[in-house]
Length: 171
Image 1 (cartoon, one colour):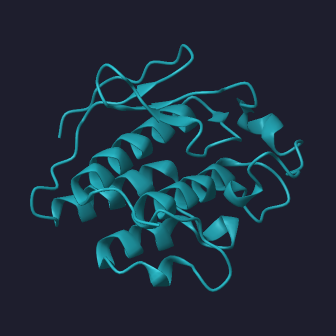
Image 2: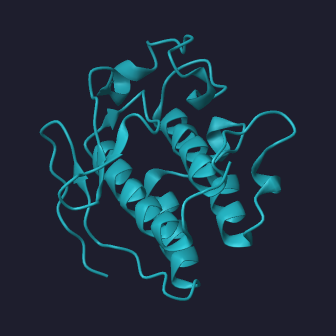
Image 3: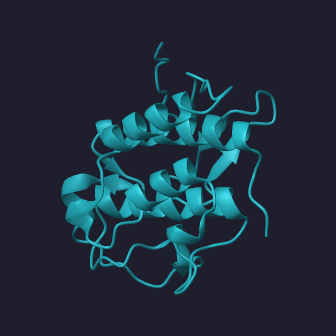
């Protein structure tokens, strides 16, 4: 497979990270982040996070044991849902954006040729939940790496679907 164009990768990664900051900032664990729930709005081409039917507030998320889903490859290797399991799912989505494929044993972030993308994906795909970044730290890392890319000025707009609006942030 082949990943998305560099400028799209950084713009969409930034928008996705901002959306997850907005969701987690409201105390919500999405529990189903994957390309099917991270979509581009037809009218603007901006990232929208949708499908909140499995979402729940963080204190109740740990009561939901991770089970096989329709897309188990996006599931964290964690025993329960948490903010950290959402971040892992974002990492798998970023990996797919970077490479056009999903990570499997023998094909992990180390196989991503672009060093900045490899660093970002590795940051989110840590095996241990306690070692994964918060959504805020992921956004900060995404902005830092995107700024280092020529023409990598990320968009500052993201809309979070299904009734949650996330306010614009200016750089």
